[in-house]
Image 1 (tube, rainbow, N blue to C red):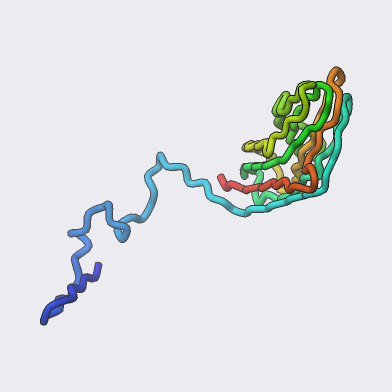
Image 2 (cartoon, rainbow, N blue to C red; image 1 turned 30 degrees about the vertical axis):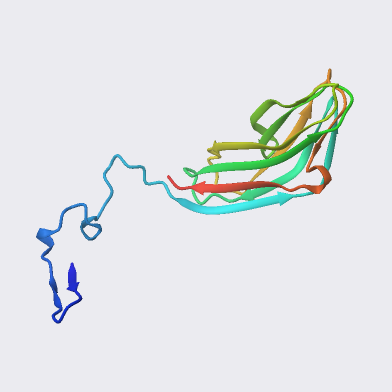
Length: 175
């Protein structure tokens, strides 16, 4: 490690022998200890939509929020992060679930993510999903969200109400 002392009338320069540098020095670190995970971010994909979608009671619909990623190895994990805007304006009881899908397969659901009573309207500015998936594939994988409003509720749920954006991020983590 080189050292230089500046100031005064004299400057000191020289090299400190490697043996005199503590292991905590960055110059001496050659590998991480075995107990530290070495996964790293390999790629990031983002999708967004601001197209309003309405879902009525007893129905389900894709929200239009989607993104695709092609993992570089079957051992990679995909961290999915969604930020969703939902809104209800109804004079009836409305509740729904927000589902995350890989292709057409549901992999995570927030049950009763949204609920409104006959008192009027209730708005949730965002519903967030974070999910670590193991698709075990090197083919393109598409993730999307859907709203499910079961029978027994009434009224309408809106996604991206008045064109407010929703965002999905896919982060590939290497093994």
